[in-house]
Length: 164
Image: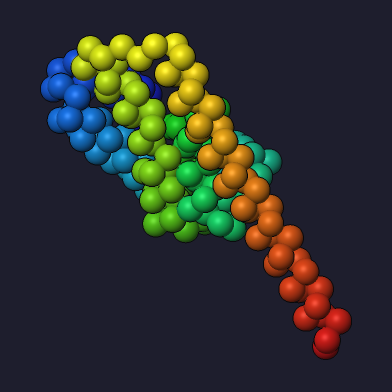
């Protein structure tokens, strides 16, 4: 809990080799995600809402719909702290299973890269750039999917209202 997943993957790759290190680091990262989420949900929710009301509401509104895909996007493009994200997500009432499943799948690309680095395999900057580009494209496509689904949902609601 609280340890950056990159450090966990790098260390596990060094200590246990690439395959075992990847498994250990990924399991540790997912376990940390679950534990932080649960501690926050059952012990810290009131404190989080009082301390960060605007951010809590924003995260809840964002993640409460299409939780799996949105958690996946957040993890593919790690733009913040996993620890803080898990605390705020746990304090909200978003669904647990889709959040953890999306997070787990989204953790994999970085876990691979940092475990390989810890295991002694160097990725050329060109390969890192290509991987980053692929992940950004995946995140953009997922975002487009969400936008289209939301648009379709609004149209269906509008048609339903007109027919009533």
